Structures are given as structure tokens and as C-alpha cells.
View 1: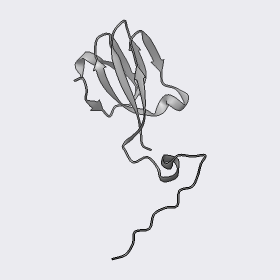
View 2: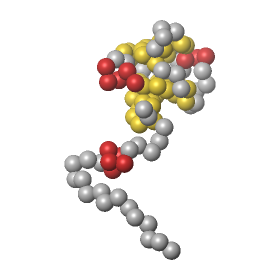
View 3: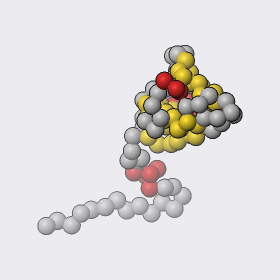
View 4: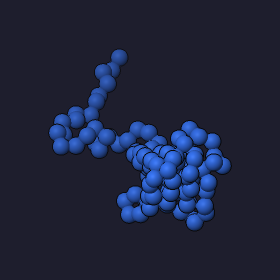
Length: 101
């Protein structure tokens, strides 16, 4: 039986994920808590999915300017819908996920 060959990873200045890539579908998470408004522009414009933890007082705008009310979605499910703005009142919590490109 042949011996497996592994990459020789000796890069002290970078992580194994920078060298080999991210293994999952999502590469980063942004948590949006209560009393917060987040405009996803610039480097944050590529969050392509969301999950609602607490739907109370949460409104979101999609990248094509559709308004979503979090109460219309199930909590703790990931939706592959690109969001450009999240507005949360005194309560509510949303997780945004950056998709693998």
C-alpha cells in the first residue's frame, strides 16, 4: 500500500486556511445584535446568507431592494439570500454568513 503524501505546510505567517482554502460553504460570520443598523458595503458586501436567532424588531433589505421582515422566516435556519442592510430595534439578533466564492 502506498504511503499518502501531504502538503508540507511551514508558513508561519499564514494559516492553513489561507494555504489550502476554506473547507465549508461559508467563510465568515457577522453577528448583528439589538439596537444596531448595518449597511453591507465595500468588503462586507459579499454576505450571501443569513440566519435569524431572534426575529423581534428585525428588518432586512436584500441586494435587489426587497424588504424582508424577519418574523416571516423560521429562526435558526440558514437562508441563501443576499442582504445589503439589517436594522434591528431594541431586541433581535441575526447572523450573516459570507459565502465561499
